[in-house]
Length: 499
Image 1 (cartoon, helix red, strand yellow):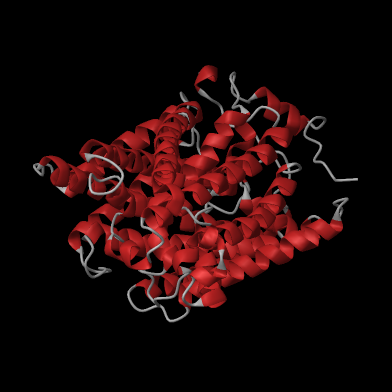
Image 2 (cartoon, rainbow, N blue to C red):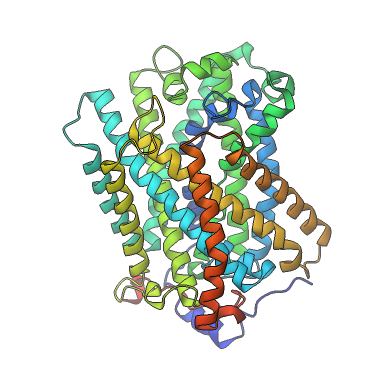
């Protein structure tokens, strides 16, 4: 029989329940957190050229079979998603993957995973902080000739809005993500269907055939890496377990629902874009900077205002990702501080709002530092032909994604031990094996023949991983945290209703 943590009977469980928000999060809310972190619209608009292979450092890619690469990546990520959902049925703390790695590989390894994971997520958020302001500036300049407000001012303004939303509480943040995601996904889903209908008789299932890839299966296998990256952050719902009604039921469902919904959208978006460019890799390459905007232009399948609407929904989804990432960091820092792996002050809650006040300050300070560095050294990690803020985002996101993929791999490696009493052991082993293959391939693709400055991101992530484990040993010796497994119930966050 599957082990279940005694959340309903222990004194800690009673405290956990008593301190849960007066209006705890629902299934829809936690789905919004995962979808917000993944950013389906943002991801599908940015990663298609990489899937095709026209903007990768090595030139490898699936070509016209990009939708097939997405399909294969989806299958692999479902294995990882199943492991997360299995853990989420028994562990209801805000630590998410940190707790899951702890179950499988032990407390010190779990703490090291937490350091790597939440630093990676923080750096991903910093990349969005740089990109979202730069994108808003460029869109206004291109479409309306307005450039009076500099990039850094937009970045700081949007950072202020973000910190306000995060501080106000999770009820506000998930509602904001839900609205932004529904608008952006709804608009683009309709547009994708419009493109497919307009293509008419030229539609073809060749996009799902290996023959459509000039490099065959090798190119498709390489592009599966980017198919995996589409789903980065799917596990974010688990960070809100303590603030969710019936987390044992809601969190596993949220993880799988968000993955499946995103998978349908990714497949629809990948196919619609390939079909919209008439299955031509050359046409995708010509519009690699903004393929969706090109398809929405008057010369293709839209109008000037449709193109502007597409730019707007991409920007909205980008901000939803910004919120989702930031909420995850604050909850992760809170849990690791509570468990003794980070300084106790980092776990401080706002007396009025009940939100992780020091964690929010940490997020704001980290983002602000990166924004300032990107302004002082704009070309430090430049990508030829792209704006400086895009180069910074590419580098920071490469670091973040490498870090997250490494923790997915660690979780899959420990799953047979952490889920050793699961009633379906063959499924545990199968999911673990699939996850190891997929994440191992993603890590390999992040370093194989990748030139500078992008390779520096992977080097930096490896350095963090190397330092994280001894740091966890030192933290355990200092605070006696080594005996903790990360599975004990923890006090829930107080919300505004308790003020």
